[in-house]
Length: 297
Image (cartoon, rainbow, N blue to C red; front, side, top):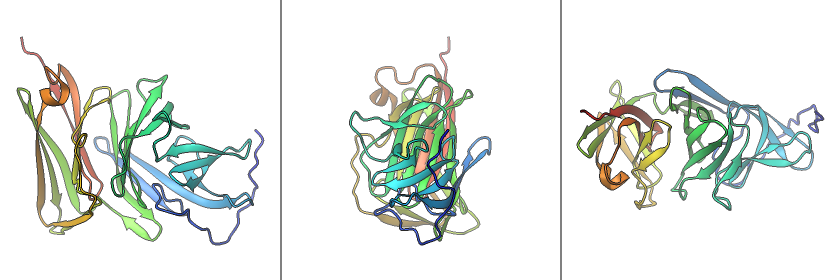
């Protein structure tokens, strides 16, 4: 394959793309993600820059998709360099596109992505759909401006896998969202009512500072065994756009009662296995639990 990339780097100050970045590209940036149940980790790194001489500056991005790529920021998107033609191609769109779905190449499957809702403050959620594979591919991602991707759900033959940001180095800032807190989600069902409880606990007496970009403090999602979203707590709700900061000295508990028939239609949840995801949005805390519905005869 013919490559148009010059085999040298330019050692001069690199100007960042204007505006906030959903995946900040700067040499040395690193994000480490941990899967809840298995402890498996994933790492995304940003390598050295290069310039093509026409003003376009790229960084070597590894771990974000299946293949290392030369990537640069653009308004509302990440672009990668097509090494055969020298053209920019879309890697990830952080804005809605015509038709709703954008191409999302270099994932494990043939996939497309879609911004789930209008951006609220600094947070953005995306979902994916796959073509040609049933037990692989990305299902959902969460991003925070100037921090990066904070959460990713992937499909597998054993069911969804949940990778949350464990630590990150972005520029001079170091993020450790789970360093001083423990978070879990509890579910109790009776009839067609479900009680979902989110518990965030500070560890070792060290208080947690949570910074919420909008009035939305939490999110709850119900998925089926295939990873399809059945219900999302925030859908149809309005939130203030004012940022807020709170301190948790011991434990913060959030409880929601879900009317399953109102949320899912007559009959509520049918027999099968389900996953409930819980998030506290002020510090990239996320957790999941599974439960089953059985018909007793």
